[in-house]
Image (cartoon, rainbow, N blue to C red; front, side, top):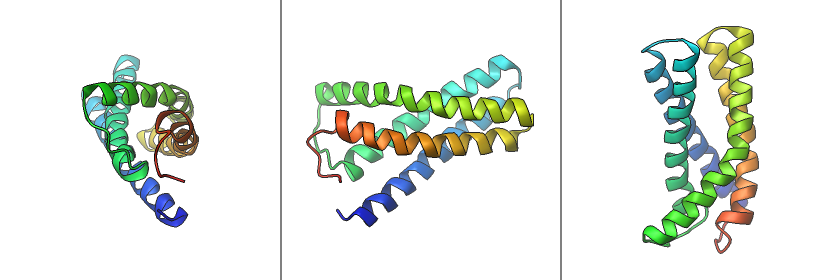
Amino acid sequence: MSRASLVFRYSVFAVIATLANLGAQRLVLMLGETRAWFALAMITGTALGLAVKYALDKRWIFADMSTGLRAHSRKFSLYSAMGLITTAIFWASETLFWVIGQTHSAREIGAVLGLAVGYLVKYQLDRRFVFTTSEAM
């Protein structure tokens, strides 16, 4: 796959995962806006975004055709572990914008910025440590 195609696909998948994440957060925050609801919204959105991004990346970015519970368990575990680093970037950015801006728009701007930086870091980590036998650049 060409570098341009890879960048395009990865960007589109990042947008899809971001929309899934923020959509899930909005649904949770409709139930309340306390700190507890905010934390639950971030956790729920992150989990959904992670699952969506893994499914897309595995097949369409890293050309990983492995199947079976064992292969998926191992790779998803590594993928999630790499995500801990990038999740910290995302959550810090989203929380900072939420605390400073006190609006959902500010929170979502912080989330988008944090996710963008996080996804750039995550690609490098996934390529190096998770999908080590793939065709991605």
